[in-house]
Image 1 (cartoon, rainbow, N blue to C red):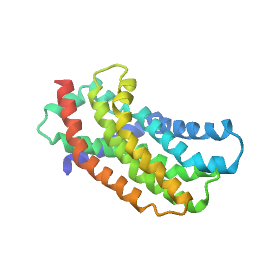
Image 2 (cartoon, rainbow, N blue to C red; image 1 turned 45 degrees about the horizontal axis):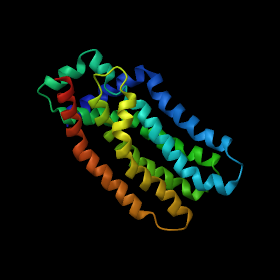
Image 3 (cartoon, rainbow, N blue to C red; image 1 turned 60 degrees about the horizontal axis):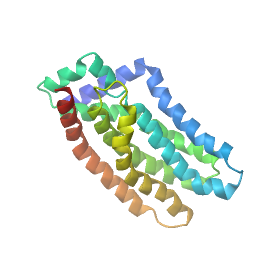
Length: 221
């Protein structure tokens, strides 16, 4: 636990020194989501029907954009190599790093999602559905994406390869997350999607840190 907290605190300090890394995913998220209402006919029913899916896709793309830089700086200055060979618990260290990364990206995306709902004329009573879905889904996106980032950390331009590796694993999260909105629009219960996203998050929290640590050891060594 001390290792997790140490790396979480360190990552937050580094991210706040580089405000561009904090702002870039959020700006990208907003721009992608806003392009669709401007490019489609101004029909309320059409915007409402696609709004949830568009916002989810924008969140996935914004998360992918932030993944390439997750381990890059630490690899360049040798910090990551020291973490791999150090006696500290590497999975716990990487979990602290990933959680800090999520709070600076996925959490901000989730908090900003109700604002984007307005542009798609999504009813106010459905704002919480999208927010809860993103709050449960974006940590899994970050944890799974960190595995791809660890596998490509030694490559100069690994962003495309990360997308190729990770996007297929994002499909279930995207299906259940966007499905919450469509279920809610039809007046149906969304609890099954909530449980599924929570189960995926639990599985990601349990297995992803070990997968990240293993990927880093295999890649760097």
